[in-house]
Image (cartoon, rainbow, N blue to C red; front, side, top):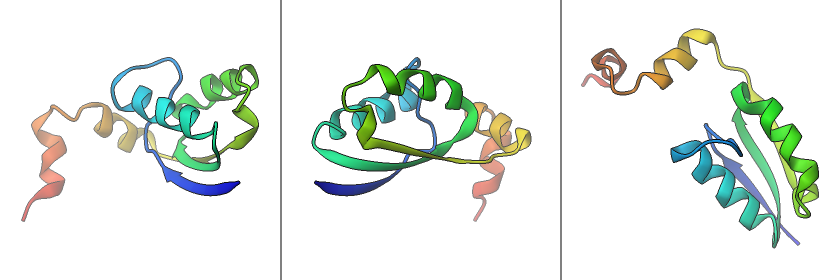
Length: 89
């Protein structure tokens, strides 16, 4: 079985957009591959609750990257102009 490393900053079984897309990619790939997934720890409880319910859950290994509340808030407020001050030339 092929092993794949995935870096998905936001990954959650109970959300849409980027978090849901990462979750769906991982759950579908896990049918065919062993995954090692690096993600932010905000949704750890939801991920850990969902894994045992999936037949392919044994192929999904999560590694949670600690992120400060300041960074988490900044990432949630991406539409805010202050988020983009970090991308100055």
